[in-house]
Image (cartoon, rainbow, N blue to C red; front, top):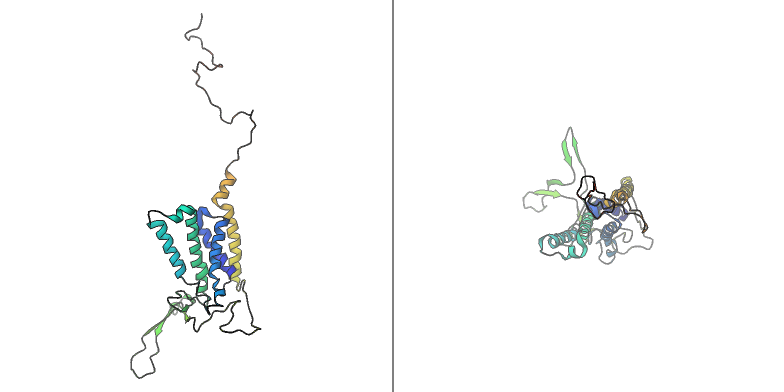
Length: 271
């Protein structure tokens, strides 16, 4: 089960690719806050039972945010979001939405416990977990979506079962519960209940966190703002008596120039 630490690490890597020239510490903090918000349904599960991985993990929230942001900044004659926050604010918002979809929801969707991805419109947990490979004997195989024949009803109707498509359905909030350190089990818990707060559970999660730290550090060093600051020369301080770096060169034919001299043969020369 990916922890909030893993979600944030992956989400910041996504943000680094989306932010472009607006990559900085404040933008990363905004994206990290959006990713952390998704995991706060571990707390709401104490009030609305079994809504962990459902209430804030629904894809309807980022879908609504993306639709509003696109319509507000692209379709209207005037964009209040752009006027108040500028192009930077719009880009940070898109980065936060991308991080929430890919890292906050996507990582949990590929976990065996699954996500109630369309809650509350469709109360069903799904786990997009499986494998895909090519075998020299069996050809291409995948187990993400299983298609088969449904078992016919035991009543004597005589009809066939029909096709069955399994996309990893786990159950609804009424009969399925995704445990967490805050709400481990469904219903009343014993006093000695075991609570586990994950940091990293697999080697790939630890590798992802380390890669995020290293990658973001390098990205910060190579960001346009940093590169510009390092390559732009700083003008040296000069006192009032110092000569300017650029001097005006007067026209040589200017009669008012005290340094100019008349050449022989010009009018006014005395033989």
